[in-house]
Length: 306
Image (tube, rainbow, N blue to C red):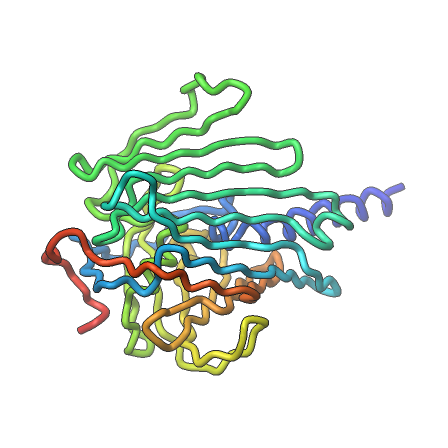
Protein backbone atom coordinates (compact mmCIF):
# COMPACT_ATOMS: atom_id res chain seq x y z
CA UNK A 1 0.00 0.00 0.00
CA UNK A 2 2.78 2.39 0.96
CA UNK A 3 4.65 1.57 -2.26
CA UNK A 4 1.52 2.32 -4.25
CA UNK A 5 1.11 5.70 -2.54
CA UNK A 6 4.79 6.55 -3.12
CA UNK A 7 4.50 5.62 -6.78
CA UNK A 8 1.40 7.81 -7.15
CA UNK A 9 3.18 10.73 -5.52
CA UNK A 10 6.18 10.30 -7.81
CA UNK A 11 3.94 10.26 -10.86
CA UNK A 12 2.19 13.40 -9.68
CA UNK A 13 5.52 15.18 -9.18
CA UNK A 14 6.74 14.04 -12.58
CA UNK A 15 3.50 15.12 -14.22
CA UNK A 16 3.84 18.57 -12.60
CA UNK A 17 7.43 18.84 -13.80
CA UNK A 18 6.49 17.91 -17.37
CA UNK A 19 3.63 20.39 -17.35
CA UNK A 20 5.94 23.10 -16.04
CA UNK A 21 8.36 22.34 -18.86
CA UNK A 22 5.69 22.93 -21.50
CA UNK A 23 4.37 26.14 -19.99
CA UNK A 24 7.88 27.37 -19.23
CA UNK A 25 8.79 28.81 -22.61
CA UNK A 26 5.54 30.63 -23.04
CA UNK A 27 5.65 32.15 -19.59
CA UNK A 28 9.29 31.38 -18.76
CA UNK A 29 9.68 29.19 -15.67
CA UNK A 30 6.85 28.17 -13.39
CA UNK A 31 4.92 31.03 -11.83
CA UNK A 32 4.86 29.48 -8.35
CA UNK A 33 8.64 29.71 -8.03
CA UNK A 34 8.94 33.43 -8.66
CA UNK A 35 11.13 35.30 -6.24
CA UNK A 36 13.08 38.49 -5.84
CA UNK A 37 16.19 37.94 -3.77
CA UNK A 38 18.85 39.51 -5.97
CA UNK A 39 18.88 43.23 -6.75
CA UNK A 40 20.54 44.42 -9.96
CA UNK A 41 20.68 47.92 -11.45
CA UNK A 42 18.05 48.63 -14.09
CA UNK A 43 17.84 51.46 -16.63
CA UNK A 44 15.59 54.35 -15.69
CA UNK A 45 14.92 55.22 -19.32
CA UNK A 46 13.94 53.20 -22.35
CA UNK A 47 16.57 51.41 -24.37
CA UNK A 48 17.26 52.65 -27.86
CA UNK A 49 15.86 50.10 -30.31
CA UNK A 50 17.23 50.17 -33.83
CA UNK A 51 14.83 49.92 -36.78
CA UNK A 52 13.76 48.09 -38.77
CA UNK A 53 13.26 45.58 -35.97
CA UNK A 54 14.93 42.16 -36.38
CA UNK A 55 11.50 40.53 -36.72
CA UNK A 56 8.70 41.38 -39.16
CA UNK A 57 4.94 41.51 -39.09
CA UNK A 58 3.82 38.01 -39.98
CA UNK A 59 6.76 36.20 -38.41
CA UNK A 60 5.76 32.78 -37.06
CA UNK A 61 8.09 30.40 -35.21
CA UNK A 62 7.02 26.89 -34.18
CA UNK A 63 8.94 24.74 -31.65
CA UNK A 64 8.73 21.15 -30.48
CA UNK A 65 9.09 20.82 -26.72
CA UNK A 66 11.03 17.87 -25.31
CA UNK A 67 11.36 16.98 -21.65
CA UNK A 68 13.99 14.84 -19.95
CA UNK A 69 14.27 13.72 -16.34
CA UNK A 70 16.01 10.62 -15.10
CA UNK A 71 14.88 7.85 -17.48
CA UNK A 72 12.07 9.91 -19.01
CA UNK A 73 12.69 11.42 -22.46
CA UNK A 74 9.57 12.53 -24.29
CA UNK A 75 7.94 15.02 -26.62
CA UNK A 76 5.44 16.96 -24.54
CA UNK A 77 4.17 19.87 -26.59
CA UNK A 78 4.38 22.55 -29.21
CA UNK A 79 4.95 26.29 -28.74
CA UNK A 80 4.22 28.93 -31.38
CA UNK A 81 5.45 32.53 -31.40
CA UNK A 82 3.76 35.04 -33.74
CA UNK A 83 4.19 38.73 -34.53
CA UNK A 84 1.32 40.75 -35.98
CA UNK A 85 -0.02 44.26 -36.49
CA UNK A 86 -2.95 45.07 -34.17
CA UNK A 87 -6.12 46.04 -35.97
CA UNK A 88 -6.54 49.80 -36.20
CA UNK A 89 -3.16 50.74 -34.69
CA UNK A 90 0.11 51.69 -36.40
CA UNK A 91 1.81 52.49 -33.08
CA UNK A 92 1.79 48.99 -31.66
CA UNK A 93 3.06 45.48 -32.32
CA UNK A 94 1.34 42.35 -31.03
CA UNK A 95 3.25 39.31 -29.78
CA UNK A 96 1.36 36.07 -29.22
CA UNK A 97 2.62 32.80 -27.78
CA UNK A 98 0.58 29.60 -27.77
CA UNK A 99 1.58 26.48 -25.80
CA UNK A 100 -0.24 23.23 -26.60
CA UNK A 101 0.32 19.79 -25.05
CA UNK A 102 1.33 16.92 -27.31
CA UNK A 103 2.69 13.38 -27.09
CA UNK A 104 3.50 11.94 -23.66
CA UNK A 105 1.95 14.79 -21.72
CA UNK A 106 -1.43 13.77 -23.13
CA UNK A 107 -1.01 10.02 -23.62
CA UNK A 108 0.82 9.20 -20.36
CA UNK A 109 -0.34 11.90 -17.96
CA UNK A 110 -3.71 12.96 -19.40
CA UNK A 111 -2.72 16.63 -19.32
CA UNK A 112 -4.31 18.86 -21.94
CA UNK A 113 -2.86 22.35 -22.16
CA UNK A 114 -3.72 25.28 -24.38
CA UNK A 115 -2.27 28.47 -22.94
CA UNK A 116 -2.12 31.71 -24.92
CA UNK A 117 -0.11 34.80 -23.96
CA UNK A 118 -0.76 38.06 -25.80
CA UNK A 119 1.34 41.22 -25.45
CA UNK A 120 0.71 44.67 -26.91
CA UNK A 121 3.92 46.73 -27.15
CA UNK A 122 5.08 50.07 -28.52
CA UNK A 123 6.74 49.43 -31.87
CA UNK A 124 9.26 52.23 -31.30
CA UNK A 125 10.90 51.04 -28.07
CA UNK A 126 8.90 47.87 -27.20
CA UNK A 127 7.47 49.30 -23.98
CA UNK A 128 4.67 46.95 -22.91
CA UNK A 129 1.17 48.39 -22.70
CA UNK A 130 -0.74 45.24 -21.86
CA UNK A 131 -0.33 41.54 -21.12
CA UNK A 132 -3.09 38.94 -21.35
CA UNK A 133 -2.67 35.29 -20.33
CA UNK A 134 -5.43 32.81 -21.14
CA UNK A 135 -4.75 29.57 -19.27
CA UNK A 136 -6.48 26.27 -20.09
CA UNK A 137 -5.00 23.26 -18.34
CA UNK A 138 -7.44 20.34 -18.18
CA UNK A 139 -10.46 21.66 -16.24
CA UNK A 140 -8.56 24.70 -14.98
CA UNK A 141 -9.52 28.00 -16.66
CA UNK A 142 -8.13 31.41 -15.79
CA UNK A 143 -7.25 34.75 -17.35
CA UNK A 144 -4.60 37.13 -16.12
CA UNK A 145 -4.32 40.67 -17.41
CA UNK A 146 -1.88 43.48 -16.73
CA UNK A 147 -2.27 47.04 -18.01
CA UNK A 148 0.65 49.46 -17.84
CA UNK A 149 0.33 53.24 -17.49
CA UNK A 150 3.49 54.78 -18.90
CA UNK A 151 2.73 58.25 -17.55
CA UNK A 152 2.17 57.27 -13.92
CA UNK A 153 4.56 54.28 -13.97
CA UNK A 154 1.90 51.98 -12.58
CA UNK A 155 0.69 48.50 -13.46
CA UNK A 156 -2.81 47.17 -12.80
CA UNK A 157 -2.86 43.39 -12.55
CA UNK A 158 -5.98 41.25 -12.27
CA UNK A 159 -6.81 37.54 -12.14
CA UNK A 160 -10.12 36.74 -13.82
CA UNK A 161 -12.19 33.65 -13.11
CA UNK A 162 -14.24 32.97 -16.30
CA UNK A 163 -17.09 31.74 -14.14
CA UNK A 164 -17.20 35.07 -12.26
CA UNK A 165 -15.80 37.71 -14.66
CA UNK A 166 -17.04 40.66 -12.59
CA UNK A 167 -15.22 39.57 -9.43
CA UNK A 168 -12.40 42.08 -8.84
CA UNK A 169 -11.18 40.64 -5.55
CA UNK A 170 -7.94 39.43 -7.17
CA UNK A 171 -6.75 42.77 -8.48
CA UNK A 172 -3.76 44.88 -7.48
CA UNK A 173 -2.14 48.11 -8.60
CA UNK A 174 1.55 48.70 -8.07
CA UNK A 175 4.42 50.93 -9.06
CA UNK A 176 6.59 49.75 -11.94
CA UNK A 177 9.30 51.25 -14.18
CA UNK A 178 8.90 54.00 -16.77
CA UNK A 179 9.94 51.37 -19.36
CA UNK A 180 9.30 47.68 -18.81
CA UNK A 181 8.98 44.31 -20.57
CA UNK A 182 6.86 41.25 -19.83
CA UNK A 183 7.54 37.50 -20.07
CA UNK A 184 6.82 37.45 -23.81
CA UNK A 185 8.27 40.75 -25.03
CA UNK A 186 11.52 40.11 -23.11
CA UNK A 187 12.58 37.57 -25.75
CA UNK A 188 11.79 39.96 -28.60
CA UNK A 189 13.62 42.78 -26.85
CA UNK A 190 16.67 40.53 -26.38
CA UNK A 191 16.67 39.99 -30.14
CA UNK A 192 17.22 43.73 -30.69
CA UNK A 193 20.52 43.79 -28.77
CA UNK A 194 23.89 43.41 -30.49
CA UNK A 195 25.32 41.11 -27.79
CA UNK A 196 28.83 41.44 -29.14
CA UNK A 197 30.81 41.18 -25.89
CA UNK A 198 31.08 37.75 -24.23
CA UNK A 199 30.01 37.86 -20.58
CA UNK A 200 28.63 41.38 -20.65
CA UNK A 201 25.07 41.45 -19.35
CA UNK A 202 22.24 43.52 -20.75
CA UNK A 203 19.95 43.96 -17.76
CA UNK A 204 16.41 45.28 -17.98
CA UNK A 205 13.13 45.29 -16.00
CA UNK A 206 10.41 42.70 -16.59
CA UNK A 207 6.95 42.66 -15.03
CA UNK A 208 4.91 39.56 -14.23
CA UNK A 209 1.77 39.27 -12.10
CA UNK A 210 2.13 42.91 -11.02
CA UNK A 211 5.70 42.49 -9.72
CA UNK A 212 8.80 43.96 -11.38
CA UNK A 213 12.04 41.98 -11.68
CA UNK A 214 15.51 42.90 -12.90
CA UNK A 215 16.66 40.24 -15.33
CA UNK A 216 19.27 40.10 -18.08
CA UNK A 217 20.88 38.34 -21.01
CA UNK A 218 24.57 37.75 -21.68
CA UNK A 219 26.52 36.27 -24.57
CA UNK A 220 28.22 32.93 -23.79
CA UNK A 221 29.81 32.37 -27.18
CA UNK A 222 29.09 31.24 -30.74
CA UNK A 223 28.00 27.80 -31.98
CA UNK A 224 26.75 26.05 -35.09
CA UNK A 225 23.35 24.51 -34.32
CA UNK A 226 21.38 21.99 -36.39
CA UNK A 227 17.62 21.80 -35.77
CA UNK A 228 14.62 20.60 -37.76
CA UNK A 229 14.33 23.99 -39.49
CA UNK A 230 17.96 23.89 -40.71
CA UNK A 231 21.56 24.53 -39.67
CA UNK A 232 22.39 27.96 -38.26
CA UNK A 233 25.37 29.89 -36.99
CA UNK A 234 24.22 31.15 -33.60
CA UNK A 235 24.92 33.28 -30.58
CA UNK A 236 24.63 31.21 -27.40
CA UNK A 237 22.92 33.45 -24.84
CA UNK A 238 22.40 33.02 -21.10
CA UNK A 239 19.00 34.30 -19.93
CA UNK A 240 19.67 35.36 -16.36
CA UNK A 241 16.38 34.75 -14.61
CA UNK A 242 17.26 32.15 -11.95
CA UNK A 243 18.81 32.41 -8.48
CA UNK A 244 16.39 35.05 -7.24
CA UNK A 245 16.44 37.28 -10.30
CA UNK A 246 12.98 36.11 -11.34
CA UNK A 247 12.99 32.47 -10.30
CA UNK A 248 14.16 31.71 -6.77
CA UNK A 249 15.57 28.28 -7.41
CA UNK A 250 18.83 27.46 -9.17
CA UNK A 251 18.81 26.70 -12.87
CA UNK A 252 19.80 27.93 -16.29
CA UNK A 253 18.01 29.02 -19.45
CA UNK A 254 20.18 29.12 -22.59
CA UNK A 255 18.89 30.42 -25.92
CA UNK A 256 20.59 30.07 -29.30
CA UNK A 257 19.90 33.10 -31.57
CA UNK A 258 20.93 33.24 -35.22
CA UNK A 259 24.16 35.20 -35.62
CA UNK A 260 22.68 37.64 -38.12
CA UNK A 261 20.37 40.64 -38.16
CA UNK A 262 17.27 38.47 -37.56
CA UNK A 263 18.37 37.02 -34.18
CA UNK A 264 15.89 34.15 -34.56
CA UNK A 265 15.75 31.78 -31.55
CA UNK A 266 16.42 28.35 -33.07
CA UNK A 267 16.86 26.44 -29.82
CA UNK A 268 16.38 26.94 -26.09
CA UNK A 269 17.19 24.72 -23.14
CA UNK A 270 16.04 25.17 -19.56
CA UNK A 271 17.65 23.11 -16.80
CA UNK A 272 16.54 22.90 -13.17
CA UNK A 273 16.01 20.27 -10.49
CA UNK A 274 12.68 19.51 -12.16
CA UNK A 275 14.40 18.29 -15.32
CA UNK A 276 15.49 19.63 -18.70
CA UNK A 277 13.14 21.19 -21.22
CA UNK A 278 14.46 21.64 -24.76
CA UNK A 279 12.76 23.69 -27.48
CA UNK A 280 13.66 22.98 -31.11
CA UNK A 281 12.63 25.21 -34.03
CA UNK A 282 10.67 23.11 -36.52
CA UNK A 283 8.99 25.74 -38.70
CA UNK A 284 10.01 29.27 -39.69
CA UNK A 285 8.02 31.97 -41.49
CA UNK A 286 9.93 35.25 -41.39
CA UNK A 287 6.98 37.42 -42.42
CA UNK A 288 7.10 40.08 -45.13
CA UNK A 289 6.42 43.53 -43.66
CA UNK A 290 9.37 45.24 -41.98
CA UNK A 291 8.63 47.06 -38.72
CA UNK A 292 9.98 50.61 -38.84
CA UNK A 293 9.72 53.48 -36.34
CA UNK A 294 6.73 55.80 -36.00
CA UNK A 295 8.56 58.66 -34.24
CA UNK A 296 12.16 59.90 -33.76
CA UNK A 297 14.50 57.82 -31.59
CA UNK A 298 14.43 58.73 -27.92
CA UNK A 299 17.48 59.43 -25.76
CA UNK A 300 17.89 55.92 -24.46
CA UNK A 301 20.60 53.83 -22.89
CA UNK A 302 21.81 51.11 -25.25
CA UNK A 303 24.45 50.08 -22.73
CA UNK A 304 25.10 46.70 -24.32
CA UNK A 305 26.22 48.29 -27.60
CA UNK A 306 29.02 50.42 -26.11
